[in-house]
Structure formats: structure tokens, C-alpha cells
Length: 498
Image (cartoon, rainbow, N blue to C red):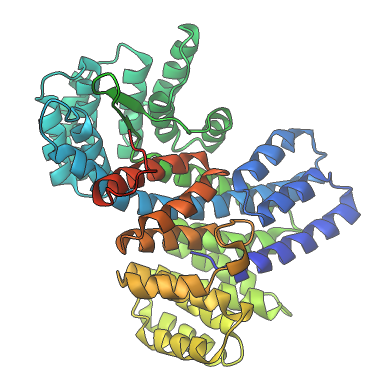
């Protein structure tokens, strides 16, 4: 999670960059307009504005526009990764409640989506159990049984049972665009390039268009996963689909229905945006004027991908410059420490974090950087935690927002939800409580999850409602939360799940 403080740093750095490039090359103002949307945390709007105009820009203006796009997609990826972590917790809880229901009005499809959610959460054995149970059940369509077998193959593949996976995939139906897209997604996720998942996905989309079929949420979700190694195709798909609707709606009687959503969707959105971020940042970095600035963002992008070695190379390139402003040097150094830790250089990482923490006496934003990067690396952050807690006890005001937010993230990952809420509440703009224009949406997502664990469902729903205005895919978390709210807070008459 990035702090709102670092958002401001990024905004200042790129604004300065665009001013320089504009004066030198007459860059179009579309990049500046996209950047204003970025500043408001409207990442998808910013990308949709700028990317279609990229080809129309003159060659001298394109590198800055590509850097802007890389920055936009990086922040979008960070947000969707946090949303996915939250969604897996809440949606799995909800689907387990649905799966446990018995009787005539019980869902027949809950086991399928629960199996998918557990697969996405890395619980392969448990996932296989629910997918097998769904495939053996009566009253479900043959198409969904086929999809379940494809997902079961993925569970086998990820649990190192390649032969079982291959047998299921070989036997899977491939007669409809939906069938082909499901197989293409499975092959892409498994890295089985010998089956040409990209070509399969293209064929599925072409066939759907020829048949006059709309690209529904289920088909689009599988296509998105199949385009794992084709970021431009993924972005084209995202531009044409909001992913607002359910993947499947199960009708239970005349007045009851359940909307199911793809549990992998938010993660796939994150990975699509992250791949796009790396693509555009690397392209921008080839321009001699922008190489160092692109390196600054690539430190984060590679770290988010789990590529510690590449992140370290970018950090070294960026930090080799002289006369860097302190805030940019400090951020790059803190991320360098995280990459060192993940690369197995733990002694060097702890020495760097300690050095930064010792320089943070009058700079809570620097201590926030240390807490965030240490937390991101899943390191032992106890000594930095103590320093951070002491600093927040003696300081107040907006200057300490980022440090409080960083502590909240730390406690959230440690499952200390009471403290997570305490510090995140202290780290948000009280005058603009849930407005993403005034608060880091990544922090708000973490706060919503902490509220959920504390059974403060209405507070959590308020955050998701506000966020869904800009990010329609958040609807799937809202629906799951409303379902749990309806069962655990039966007095809430204004809550409607079905």
C-alpha cells in the first residue's frame, strides 16, 4: 500500500517532468488532463482518456505520455491488488454460508464459485473438494459442469498434479466461445504456451462476435486471464467492458435470485494493469530524457511483480543520480530495502531501514515509508513499529496521516483489526470521510476490510459504495458484504441481498 503522502510526491515529480517536456516538445495537454484525473485517484478514467490518444501524439510527446500511463496503471494495479485481498476474505465467507444452506431454496451454484475463490486464494485441496462436489451435483447446466472441470484441472495443476490437470483439460468441451475462453484462461494461468492460449482467446472472441453474442462478464473474465502476456489486448478488453455485472445469476423461485461474481476478476484486473504499467514505463525509459524518472516508478512496479532483482537494478540506477530531492531518494531507498529483503539480503535491508528510521525524527512521512516497505516485504518490523507508535502519540494533524495509515496497514496484515481501524481512522481526511479524491483508496480498502472483521458492516459498505462510483467491479464485494450483513444483522431492514 502506498501512502497519500507518496501520491503527492509522485504528482509533483510527474508535473515537473511534463512541464519540462511540454516546453521542449509541445506535448499535448491530454497528458496533463489525465494527470489531473490521476491526482483525484480516478485511474481508470485517466487511462481511458489518455491511451486512445497516444497514437495521435507526435513522437516527441509520446514518451511523457507513456510515462503518465505507466504511472496511472501502476496505481490502479496497487488498488486492485488490495481489493482482491479484501474480496477473497469477504466473498469466501459469503460463499461458505451459501454452500452450507440446505433445502429447496439452497443455491446449486455456490460450490462452483466457492471452489473458484479457494483456488484463487491458494487453497487447492479444499478448492478441488467443492469443484468435484459441484460437478457431481444434479440440477446444474452441462456448461457449468464443464467449467468446473476446467477449474478443477487448474487446482490440480497448481498442486503439482499435471497429469490429472491435462486429462481434465483434454476432455473439456470446446464447442462455444465460453468453453474456449475458459480453456484459454486455464492454459494461460498454467503457462502452458504449447496450447496457444492467446490464439484460443482471440478465436473465442471472434466467434462470439460472429454469433452476435455480447461479451458477458463470464466470457470477458476468462479472456482477460488468457491475455496475461498481451497487455495491449487486455487493455482493449477493459476499455470495452466495465465488469459491473455478475458473472452468473441463479434464479431461486419467482422472487429470489443470487448474483455470483468471478472471484479471480479483481486479481486479473490488477495483473493486467501491472503488466501495462511495466510495458509503458519501460517504453518511456528508453527516452534519454526520461530514463531516470521511469526508473523511479519501475522500482515499485517490479517490486509489485515480485521481481526483486529488477527492482534493485532500477533503484541503483535512480539513486546513482546526484542532487536528488530527499523525498524521492528516501522512497527509492525504502523500496530498495524491501527488494533486498525479498532477494535474501536481509542484513543489508535491515541496515538500510534502520538508517532511514533514525533520520525520521522530525519527518513522519519518512517513517511511514519505512513501515510500508517493511510491511510489504513481510519482514520483522517490530522496532520500526515501536518508533512509529511513539511518533503518532506525540504528533497530530495532516503531517501524520501517512504514518497512521502505514501503521494501520501493518496491523491489518497482523490481524489486529481493532488497532488497524484506530490508526487508519487517524490517517484519513475526516472532512471527506470516504471520498477517494481526498483519501488514498488503497488505505480506504484496508479500512473497509478491518471494519468487516470487527463486524462494522455498515461502515465497510459505506466505503465500498463510494468507491464503486469510480470502480464498478467493487460491486462484487458489496454484494457479498450485503449477504453477510443480511444474515448476521437481521435487524437491518434496508439491506437487500436478493
